[in-house]
Image (cartoon, rainbow, N blue to C red; front, side):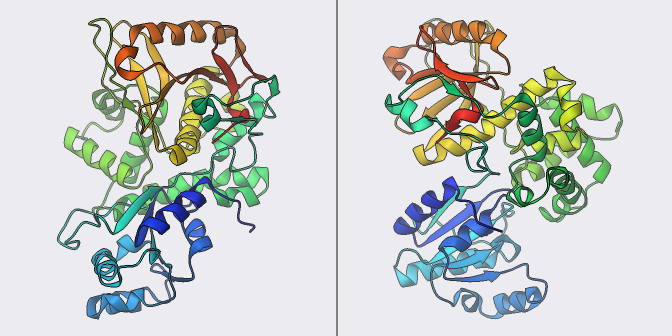
Length: 421
């Protein structure tokens, strides 16, 4: 399969120039190994069934043997043999050279005695997620997020190449690289297969404790039904208890921790700026998956059935937008937040860069909501104390509509199918 360039490519190259080792973390099947292999000159695949036991014995006897090879050396799924971490850290100290190792991991390891030292100063981290619409060649990319922050974007009337039907399809297919080489019908099966593997295999391996598959599925379904909302763990518990009265708060917390360690769920934290008034800010996280296809598959939705429930479509569309914006922000060292105060003034997404610049985004699926969304964004700028945090770089209504343009009040209206990093 032809390798499609990823936004992570440049990030990895930059980190390799300044670090002895780089750890690429993210969910399974998102392309970590392929991206690492583009830069690597040798590789070892720890989960190779023909060599796995040999690698384990080698690690027990002399871990440094696994690191021998032309550099940078790719070490795929390192966390299955945790001692590799210390071996890489020690080799980095000994060699005192950049660009030595690329490690990939689809689960964060347990905090135990198998890892003795942090990788501080030796091992840089980067996150990969499923492909954005720009990376999968479905967004036309006429508008650059970086240019919006730099106030250098030339605006006109740009047409969105993606229809609502297209968006329903990509939400169900997801951004899994392996799905792109398949027919449209077969590609929809990838996320279903992912969920089955997650429920029956991966969620048990991540912390070496047996979990009830029906309970895992029930928790995922509750998460999917509450996607893009500030639903509390208590509400999820009540939802799950409708069919599983024996579940406890501790059990739910353990299951959610396992899903986070597998990079399956990735909530959005609340933005807490200084305000001009004494209005309180809600601090609850918004519930999100790393890719909307995980929600559609666990709810057993198809593109056609998703279009029949436009309310749910809107929540899943926001999840898609969060995924893409997280990917687009990575080169800018930015983070996605949300805002909601006690007066119910909110912004679906706040984009904040490491240098303090920020932007507010409302996510809307249709043109009828744009006026209210724009008014809401302008109201937010009057509520926050811009003397302390600065004025927003831009305000944007992110849509599934036909055209991208800038309104007379300065608010950008941009379809997700027109956006790029």
